[in-house]
Length: 115
Length: 115
Image (tube, rainbow over the protein chains, first blue to last red):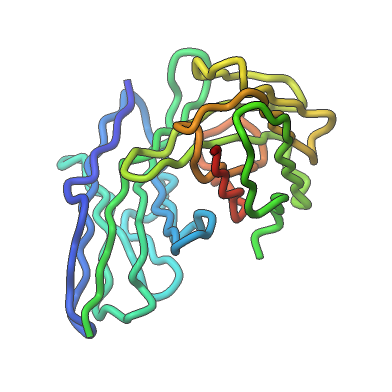
């Protein structure tokens, strides 16, 4: 069965410092993994996705994530936070489950960026 | 803009009202989704349609009634709602449900308040 755990409900960083949002998953098969961002009162926007090609995936706005199968992790990073990065971030796993492909969303991590 | 539009963006209704939420996608996708996003709760998948056929109903109360007349349009009909139904309702679409790497494209959501 698939599941996804975002290890932090809130992360607070200072502008210009690195960002690390942690995500662990479980999957019976070869999953696809995604990170989405949601700004206040907006829909979710895809940041990046892993689909069994390169394990280091680069996304929009300077974000990247590394798929580590041995650790079942897909952590999201950015070298230098910007005020506009303040938002909620969702880690998502998509995999073959009973009855077809299923997509599971994590509970979300809210990122705060301090000036 | 993501190519997925939702109307209205905001809706206030009484518990005895009947209203409908509309979602339209201009991406040529075949799968469409309704999600409920409440404060401090994970994103909840409500319904999934693939090629106009409902493939998933996650034990949603019957006061929510979906309709998918074609692959581009999705409605959520609301009647006799409860205050706890107040939430952001998000619509999404994806190419189809045939593989794990199709990301979902989200609309901006409808903010629903039930008085």
